[in-house]
Length: 257
Image (cartoon, rainbow, N blue to C red; front, side, top):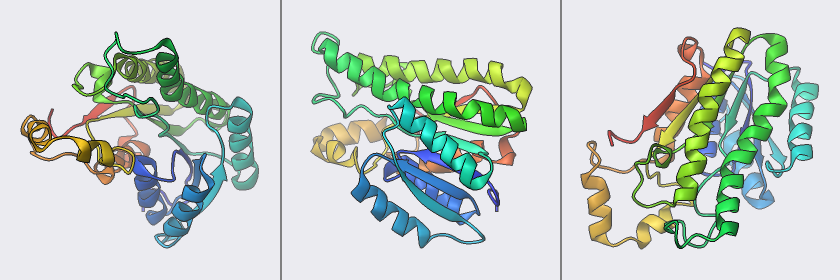
């Protein structure tokens, strides 16, 4: 029960990697504040997650836009008011599919698409982290886990330069923040997933030709693409006491790519 009595806001928790992370944490005793911007998905996720609660784990839904500073501040203030503290923050908002062509070359990208991808992948992580730092500093402990991507390493063949720049920013932000917050006993880490078959990505995967799918699998030493749980397992390691002496690190969760 790694997360007994821990309070953990998780953004983008209604599906994908955020939801898979929430499922592990509530199963292991956490009080998860599942934040998302879609009421229907959030209601369904919370109902499902409550069925997985065990050993004192709980889940509450929070309908917010994680790119809105006032709403983010309200989420953090409300969590502290209702639960006394925050122990873990998982920044799971992000992705490449908020523009029409996630695989656009730099020449094909419009400035509007560039701005949308940068904002979607960086702003929510900054805002949620900025809001939670005073609480973590006051208690001189805490874990922050961010979601980068192998695109941020320059290793994705199927995403745009804007997405690569944004996720590279997450990697750099994570490292810098670890230096800032380490003296206060706060660990800051990230994961860098490869292709992961979340609800949002699976349709794009299935739209690829069999040859393109086979090529992706062939260049992956473990010979498969990831499921959301593969990423969530590593997030939960970084959020647990098992990683108390790990900070500033971005772990590539890629099957060996």
